[in-house]
Amino acid sequence: MIKRKATAALLAALIIVGGCAARTAQQKAAGSDETDGAAYVIKAYHDRVAVFEKGNDRPEEILDCPLDSLPQDVVQKLEQGITAADEKELQRLIEAFD
Image (cartoon, rainbow, N blue to C red; front, side, top):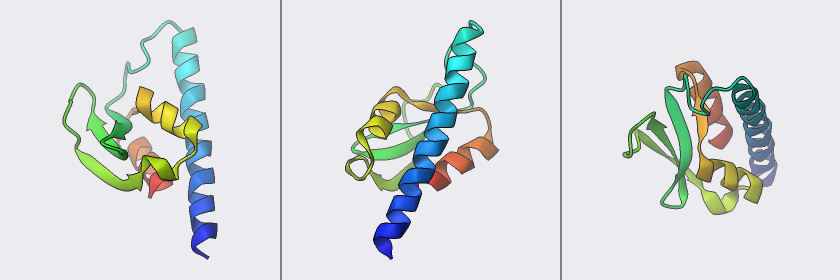
């Protein structure tokens, strides 16, 4: 049961990260900076997933999601930072990592 939940959470994270990557690619193609319009950034912080307000070096929230529990491609995206334009998008991303 726990493995099923973990697998479902990882699949959701991959789907969301994939969507974010597609949005970032569209922004780059349009000539905008990767974090333009982003209010939040989700990224790796002390071996965990953390939420930052754009431009802040101190996390707003550290999630109970160790990086070593995630696939390597997701960890790489977290090291670069996954942006969220608003609170609604941020909540969708956080739910994928919970």
